Amino acid sequence: MKKRFRTSLIFLILFVTSGYAFGMSEAFKNNIFNPGQLKPVDSILKVKVGDKAPDFALPSLSGDKISLGQFKGEKNVVISFVPAAWTPVCSDQWPGYNLAKVIFDKNDAVLLGITVDNIPTLYAWTNQMGKLWFPVLSDFWPHGNAASMFGVLRSDGVTERALFIIDKSGILRYAHVSDINKRPDLKDLVTALEKLNNK
Amino acid sequence: MKKTSIVNYVVILLLVFAGILFAEIAPPEEGGVLPDVILSLPDEPVHQKYLGITENKKAFHISEIDAEILLIEIFSMYCPYCQKDAPAVNELYDKIAQDGNLKDKIKLIGIGAGNSPFEVDFFRNTYKIQFPLFADGDFSIHKRLGEVRTPFFIGVKIKKDGTHNIFYTKQGAIEDAPKFLSLILDKAGI
Image: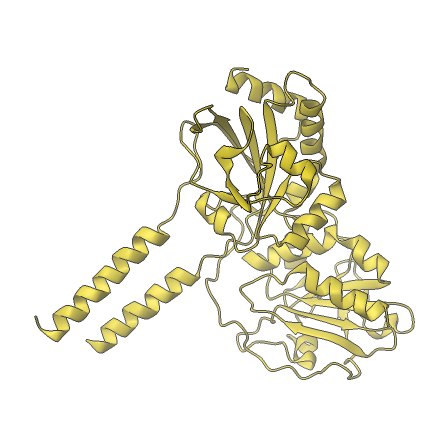
């Protein structure tokens, strides 16, 4: 009986807390798979602020391979790992960054959007977002290799919802792993970028 | 009463309570009324004046807005269609503001579903939006409005006695501001 009560209570809590309505843009109508509430964080960071950021080279939608190292000495780099294409929160996040180009420009930063999806999937998904100004990279194969170097690959093979800022000398200046079920407030990223630029 | 019966009773009560509180809410419909949505008073005096909420209130009900017709846009700065449609919505606002016969009768507000105050401000500044926008960072208003897809437009008639009714709803972008305004005037009987 206690078990039944506990099960009902867990069901109730899950039901009550599953109230976030991300991915509601008409742009994605009927095309978003809702995985439900997930474990907020399911990996352990392997990097910390002040470390030299691990380098990677990944294929992008444009066909070019893009590495972190190629921006060294030139641009600050913001990396946005999002868990998966065609899911609620992820489908919202990059269109917002697309609108916020001016903030990245102002802080002499480029944005690299990364998921573990393959290129054809990323192509179809990002087409729904309008024309993105930033490169979208596929960490599909070897699966999640770049995500794993940062310690943001979850046990089910998708990545965390994570943001990293790497300065022009290749040093990690900001690392934030969000609850996978929620979109991080743009304000936090802007504050971190401005802090970096004011140093 | 046996202990197991009491436990069963509590579980059923909890589930019924949750069902009532969190049942899926239907989107606004023509002929219906809005749920009792409370908004925070905007900081800008120009917006307070526009809404006719100039008293020292921290919050107000939508039906307190000084307008015959209120157009509500549910938007998100993260929604590509809302971004694309923002110039058309601005044009709609301008057309109303420039018409001496309409400017005091029809008011516009926007509610940023899942958007923090910073994100709403960013959207406002990016598109130079003149009408008041409100943050709904925790989706609480969005949930009460049936978790509609964005953008979503609701036309509300506010009567002098403070009651109101919804005379129009639209899922998706308005695209053509003059056409949309004509439709609104026609539907509202102005």
